[in-house]
Amino acid sequence: MNSKIIIISLSLVTLLLVAGIFLVSKPPKINPALDAFAKCLSEKKFTMYGAYWCPHCQAQKKLFGDSFQYVPNVECTQQVDLCLEKKIEGYPTWIASDGARFSGQLTLEKISEITQCKL
Image 1 (spheres, rainbow, N blue to C red):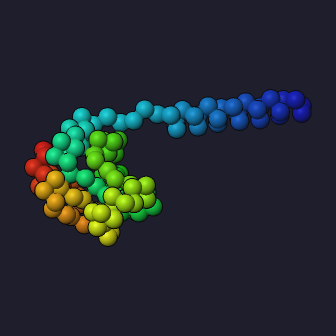
Image 2 (image 1 turned 120 degrees about the vertical axis):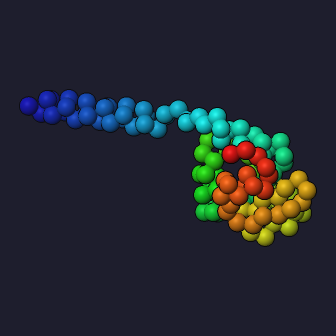
Image 3 (image 1 turned 90 degrees about the vertical axis):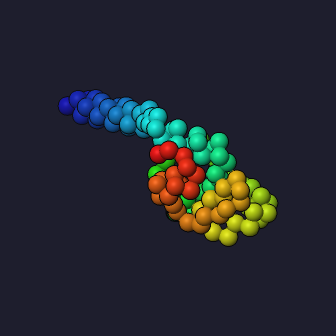
């Protein structure tokens, strides 16, 4: 009887581990339109300056999803001198190639309006 309980318990633990690995390792969602939008921001050098601990920066990144990998992004906790040089006082701060600055979390629509990148 005890061996059946042990076998059932081990089976359940194994099943939970396999299910957990499957859920964690799901492939990223691909959004070609959002990828193109983010790549356009890169081409136009529209850069976000932020910090990993900033909740507004995290929310901003979440709007882009996996496409954020294409957005020019400066992590101010790692590039302190650059952020001081750019006079970054709050997070996130977006800076356009012409030096125009936009503070705070922006909607994708607002970023599209600013950059003329198609959303």
